[in-house]
Length: 141
Image (cartoon, rainbow, N blue to C red; front, side):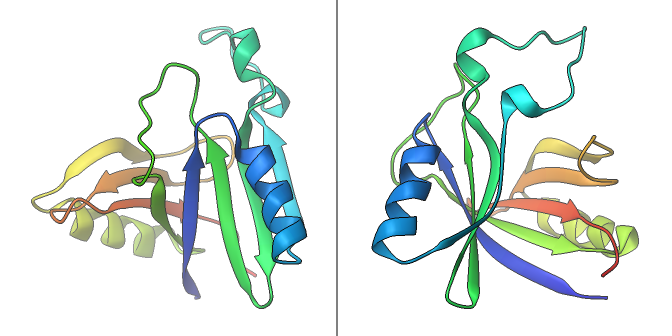
């Protein structure tokens, strides 16, 4: 079982611009991009037109390090300087639960750990120090 921590930059509609900037300035390799418009549709939550081209998730590689990105959903608050979060990834759901439970002590859950279309367990929590963590459960490699 591997556990990794990735810096995760949350942008306000300009993630694609940032990705291209880092691609050029840092010789980064784009490993993955997906827009909100490319995600599965949900009749319960229709996607606003202004959200469709925003980046839902992207990963770039700079040397041996990976950096993740997303845009905020239109209307979500965003403040420059606080857009860096940490994404902890593991392939073990029990480990994800333990990490999440530990971080939520004296913290604030902003998205409960739950099954999503992209992960068997994913959630977000702000720890007691104000650091935002995303817990992502992937597949065993």
